[in-house]
Length: 194
Image (tube, rainbow, N blue to C red; front, side, top):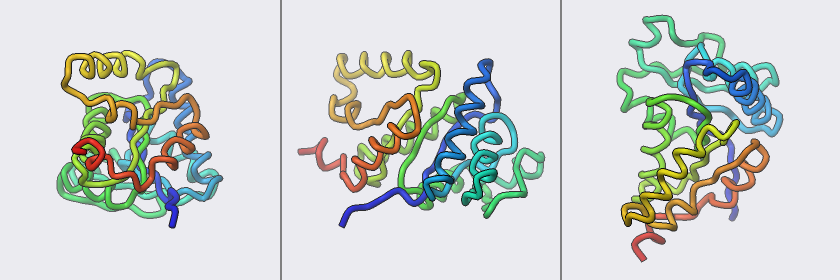
């Protein structure tokens, strides 16, 4: 029985970045997921690209599930107009719940928190803790230098080629969804140990 993506976890910045294309793309991702009947799981924030991706999904009538630590809500960093908002105590709980709620992960532009989140779920996939696929939306080439650094780690023998080949890198949502769907149910940990 083939799986499909019912909910997508999107990691992205709480800042807008310097290029308006980032916000436009984030909004389009949210809207595009909703139009395809795919729920959005995100960090619950109300600023920057986090706001844009949630707004795009909401404007298209989609399901938007936010997961945010209590301390961030107390600082008024979150949104209260979502389909569902889970307030948790720690960042660890946030990431674990987002992973439990989603079928796949997509990384949009963002900072250290965004990078940490996508790298963590990608490493979980490598270790066989989940079989949920991971992708980067390479808006305006934002991830190209990171991908080059990862290629260097393959050459240096610290990352297996299969792991880097498994990650989806796309310029648009349609291509990202095609790649992520093709990797659903693939247990990468078994491939890397075999």
